[in-house]
Length: 108
Image (tube, rainbow, N blue to C red; front, side, top):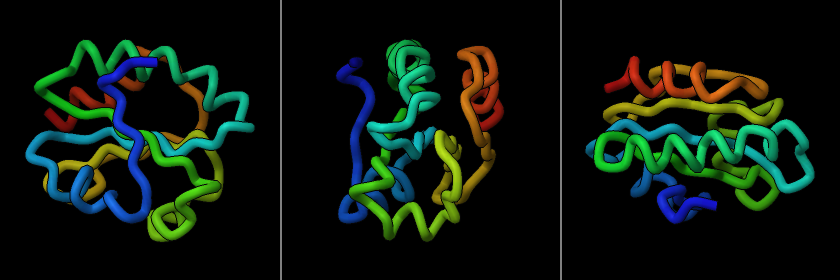
C-alpha cells in the first residue's frame, strides 16, 4: 500500500477533501469488497504518479457511514473526484487504471 494514499473518516473528510487545494479522488470502499481490492493497486500507483498534483483518499464505508450517506454511496467501489469542494466526476464499480487516471486528468 502506498503511503501517498490517505485514509480519512467522517471527522477529517472536510479538511482532507473539501478544503484541499488540489483535486482529490475519493475511493469509497470496504475491506470485504472484492472489486475494491482489485482497484487498490491502481490507486496506489496513481497516488505516486499524481503526487503534488492530485490526492487519492480512501473512505471505509463501514466505519464512516455519515460521509457515505452524505454522498449517496449505495454501491462500492465508488470513486468521486472533488475539486474546490465540489464533486466533478463519479465512477461506480471497478475500472482499470487508465479510466481512473482519466477521471483525475479531467479535474486537473
